[in-house]
Length: 345
Image (cartoon, rainbow, N blue to C red; front, side):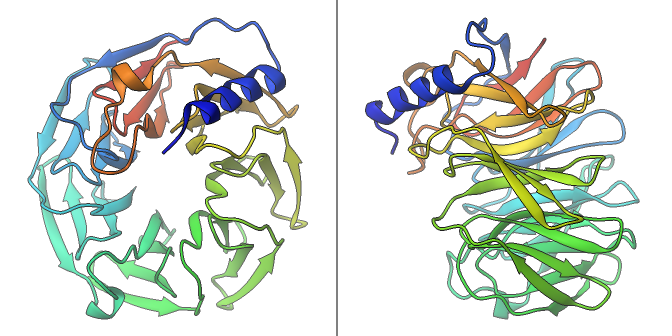
């Protein structure tokens, strides 16, 4: 768990490396109320066609549908178990696929009808009851869904129509990659979590290339693909943001934010071309401008004692994901905080 010393170091890094040292507090509005919140309530969120947001239940027992216009939310379903689904992705037909972490089912959810179908996983995927198989997923152009290997050793591509899948590659190691993006040339870029390297996987040839070699675990919690083809990696425990050039397979490390705490747990592209990094244990939301490699760290003002009760053995963590809205607001997905947090610029 994060110590007070680590928090002070985090604050010191924010003061030393923030490109705008005298920042106002961030205007974060709390919406809703979760009784007895568990740590890591939700993993990821997905923006629906009608503007609502859908939160993926990780330790929470229901799917959450949130309307950022009205501020109203609705829980749908009841799903037992911990660490159920680690991510979600929208299909062309508007349904949502949830990728299992500890869960024993792939969930296909219809947010309009509020119905779902559970597809049992291959028993070979589940090495033990607490085996974290996949860390995320993306929808491919043909409508199939790719599962990012976390502890499982292979990439899985799931057909949500036929309810079948194929597997490819063989990748050893635990907590390998935290996310991926598909490039225009049909290559996939996998963001290293505890794996030492970025993986480039060619879907045409089904071959892989490892790029870079970084020590340590819990390095980056995800990446975002920019319009110019570069990717930005969000530092969880690694000290720097990485800008990765997917054409040349070269990279640049930007900033030094320390490596003592779990800083930012996700990253999302904003309408203005900047990216928003989601605070897990960091005292600040970070807004990074990849065009000039500058950033601001905006204190969110939430204290652990008041807003993040220890729950479920995961410690006191703030948010796990966010969704930038067209009007400039950002909705943050609650981890152990008791509310949905909304930033209004």
